[in-house]
Image (tube, rainbow, N blue to C red):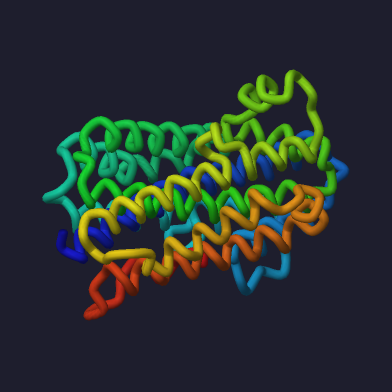
Length: 308
């Protein structure tokens, strides 16, 4: 496969996942602010902007400035609008490999952005999650399981690890943890699965364990790492290299084993720092994928805004 097309599919997966997960993170943040008026809004909003990698914060920060920087502003590299624009631009670059249905779904999402800005925030987040879920379903139903599919899944999985780590950081830093963790589970669509897994017992530590380590839940960190490793292993098996020489595979495997084989209490002791380290691993793995599989002749126009 041409490296240009492979790179475009990799970043389509990443940017669609980023738009979805940013909507989930903002949903949690705004629900906590609405449900508990005693929360320090300025402090909470600064924390979420820092977690999302926004620099040069304005002097006054509130929920509306967070919505501008992380949802509506297409010039802000961490925003949902930017991610949708980037996904569509990459889809144009890989148009010949995408099905008509998938291209139409991505293009329709892009064209629907102006109308989404007039929605209530909670409705806008639901719209983003619904559209990205539909595109993921179309991709699953229409993409052949060749190298292109593996790069799409690889990009989506690396981004899911990174963004779930940010979501866990936000929940652990929330001043009202009893609100943040159940809201986080619901934002991930994981609340019912969590209740079934732990037989109705709700606890912050168990919620973190579920979103970090549950191998059966597809949005958990470990499950996404396994998916990324599987995609890389398939690419290896298709003749790119012999033996275990893929640096990205080594980095992701190490990140997974460090989570799975360490005591949970050790990870939970300073969860934000642990999640920051996991984000660095994702950045290193993404760089390794770029160095190994993609062309070095021209910088990727839309990768410069990556939250790495």
